[in-house]
Image 1 (cartoon, rainbow, N blue to C red):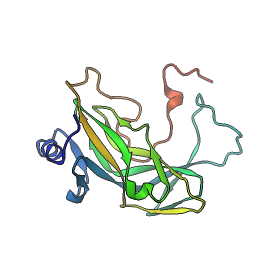
Image 2: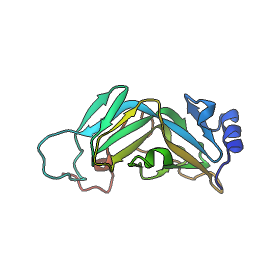
Image 3: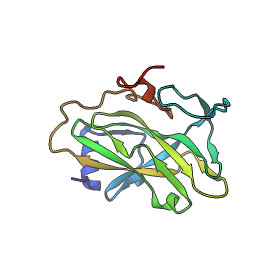
Image 4: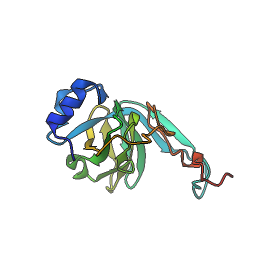
Amino acid sequence: MILSDKAIREYLETGELEINPLDDIQIQPASLDLRLGNHFLKMADTGITELDVAIKPIYEEIEQEEIIVPAKSYRVVTSQEYIKLPDDVAAFVQGRSSTARMGLFMQNSGWVDPGFEGAITVSLFNGNDVPLKLHAGVRFCQLVFAKLDQAAANPYRGKYQGQRHATGSRVSMDHDMKKK
């Protein structure tokens, strides 16, 4: 079941769902808008010719109030909001149609597991032929909350738990990853 604005407010009021900071304008009829933070990542120019998922990638960190995403390029960004999901609620991360209409595509795998706590990291891709400037504080994506039929037996406590900034890939830390 997708949570309505009324249900989102009830979860917030009881403290079962925590989102900080939060402005009332962010609560939509069936979602909650997230605002762009001021911490960004881009792949460091190390001269490598390919990325290997078994090797931790190297990022350049950028902390500023605006960022320009070059044409046909991507950046890893974070939300201003720090969230705590209860063990019986998951969330889908969706782009806002207003920014999608400007050629901005986003992905974070599209999913936030029940029990997750932290800022939301999202990968942005500029599909335009020209650079796109983004400003910290702009509502750039939204969370759609889904109530589980019961609390998860194993809520999320993984490698991204507690992140406060844009966080690069940690796939090389997976237990089933062949170490190099």
